[in-house]
Length: 183
Image (tube, rainbow, N blue to C red; front, side):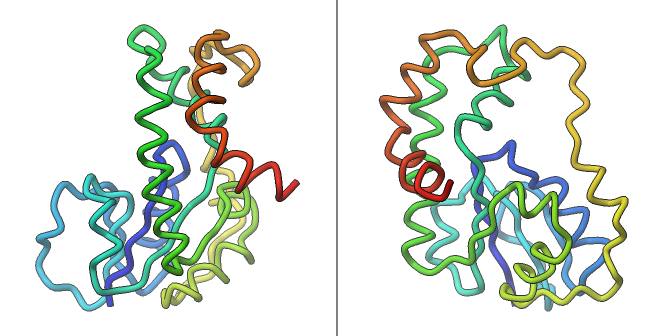
C-alpha cells in the first residue's frame, strides 16, 4: 500500500523519511521527482513535487501541519538573499492543497508532535497503516534540529514587515483555522 504525505516543506519531511526508512515496514522516499517508481509493496512518498495530484491517487494520505509563520521563518533563514514577497503567495498555494487533503480525510499530525513525541508519531504512522518494526529510539527525536548557523531572523517577529504583512494577507485564513483556534 502506498502512503502519500503532503506538507509545506520545512516541516520535518527529511526527518520523517529517515524514521520511516529505518524503523518501519515501509520504504520512505523524500521528495520524489516522479510518481513512477517500481512497485514496492509498502512505500511512503513524502512531499513530492506533484503533491496536488496525491489526493487523487489510491492509497493512504497524511498531512504534516506546521505553522506557516514558522515555515516562512525557516525559508527566510535559508534564502534571505533571494527572498521576495512572492514567497507568501507561493506558500498559500501549498496551504490550499493541504486544506483540500484535510477535507478529504487525510490523517493529520502537527509538526511539533511529530518531532517531539514518539508516541504521537507512532500513533499517526499506525493510522496511516505503517507499522513501526523497531522501536524508535529517543535520540532520533533530537536529530530534528536545524543547524543553520546563519540565522538572519531568530523569530517570526524579526522578519521584515513587508513579509509579515503579506503573510497575514494571503495566509491568515490558514493560520486562524489551524493554529490560532487550537491554542
